[in-house]
Length: 467
Image (cartoon, rainbow, N blue to C red):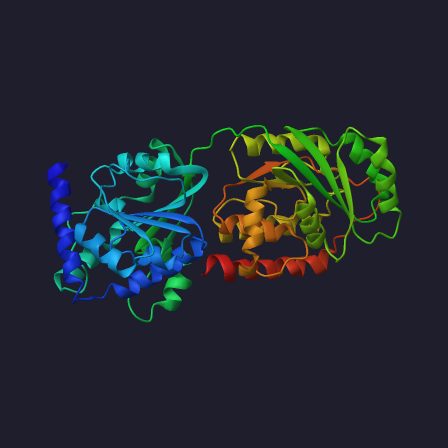
């Protein structure tokens, strides 16, 4: 190992000096890498880059605290000169004891290819993680070994020593051994040369071109650990649901260290507001809040409810009770156990009651589930189930970065799903039994909202998949 490391340190020192006067053809590749990482890593996070080179990637991510390490003294010297606002340390990835964490994001960009012991280096990062830390790795596709060797021989690319040439399966296995869980993977950069925009943004996402990509990306998180008991806010947007209010108070269970119900009444034509107001004093042991919705649409109501709630965990429950409140503890268990970070209810697994969902709606939901699973890179079977559960701190991040997507979603479901995907959170589907309404009529219009779902597919393609 010592001989291996010394040889590589000398090699990368010479590459650093060479780059002072030589650029080669790799600039387009690194430019595209930066674009991908800028999508994956929001600004103002604590970021550690292992194998940072001269620090250009780390600097472009605009971290609140940025730390770069590299075992090449010449690389680190140049990084400090070019980006004095960030921290850079000459250090071996196999021993990170000199770094203080934690970090929100840890990056290994084209680093695992060159490591002596990948598992050991990954294990070193565990001490620097929180449960929400994301580990992002990219590494070369073995199919590119011959083209890269030719480019190096012609002095068009930086010279490399023998590489590990790991597959995504190899990396996923090492992450598992090191105590991490892979969330999703992708293939990027089909044409690392000029005029590669269309190929690198669109073609590389499609079969069979994705198999030919130069770079594999894997996003992982620390293996889940049970969280402490947490408080819960159940947010209910209620419009024309007066007949269900009494049942809501009677059936919503107490979870965690305490459960509150937050009602947002939305311009009902019946006496929904008065029904809630009348039930609240009859249930003094159930903390509850009631607000009149200032705007229109479910998304507006849910945002108000989240803003006014106080729980560590935020739950959405539809006031029509087609998802039984008795199922909410299953959502609570799924999120506090760490099995998921965004728990999405699914109505399309178990048989439904006869009038719970019309046949065309069911078929449409199935088709859209396949589309969204492909677009988001994680299985998501039912985007419009009203029951969704997440940590407040994650919602706060989604809210703070909402400008990326804009105010595009009248439902509120996609705002949360897309936001969780953008944060690289582990999305988990939780099947529930979907019931027939016992009061009122649905607020969903099959054709109007079907067209809206098509717009959401196009929106996700543009803002998440083809970036």
